[in-house]
Length: 384
Image (cartoon, rainbow, N blue to C red; front, side, top):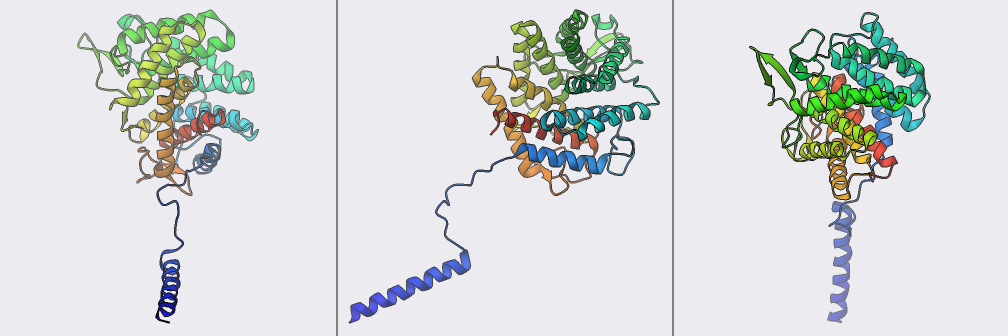
């Protein structure tokens, strides 16, 4: 009898204990040692950011404001906005982007005094590059005409000061920057690809040789910002190393390799990419560095564009490709989990944390470029 009573008591205690657990702690987990794997839909995230950016920043004339509800966002940020339109159109095939692209192109001219010509050579180069991409995506001759106009305008700033190179601005004959030479090389290769005119290829090769000799660290492949004549002495700004200069140098070497088949160009691009992933001048603990808002807010997006193209290159060996994919994937997932403010889909310059201040156009475009890159690589089954 005592044994029967004991069994009943233990049974009732068990029921009570389970009831208590269900009520206070919720259901017991059998997989408590594992985290559920997140399935990313990078295309959907890119679409959400595209829609939000358009809704918050676009002006009546089709250009983008620098801040929501503000004034024209500047020539070069709007040139990169054309890039992200092309990203979205080539990914989705959504015809709505065609009208937006054309309005944006013409609004840049209108906001620039009725001309595409600008004192800043790099501004024109950013637009020239995005226009060639728009031409390739649409076969609309207007984009190619603008790109060729910009090319010839920029070349007026070539000189033999320091043995060659393009000046930063039309009025700085003794200052030549990576940002006015790397994008010129990229533009030359783009124009060569669509016209098959060797004239452009020769310019790309010559400028590449000049930049490598004057503005690229031979040990790391990282890119110094500029060379300037100071009190009669050529002086290289070696302590200014920015992500976007590394990006366009990667793009320059990659494209020249793809055109010529000369392996040295590809080795240069890979060297710069490897250093960018590991050195503090470009990244910290696997994340591209915070370069602030304003102009710096857009730097990382430029890097991501050309770094992504390098990942896509079939000639990259498997070990290097894996490290590059892992690096970009880590940036994308970190940004997605920690750096993207919902529901407005805005971001800050530090991809490890939510924006603490208002987000300007340049900063938003960098985050959008990252999501478009992730969507592209997922579509090609390079990303999960």
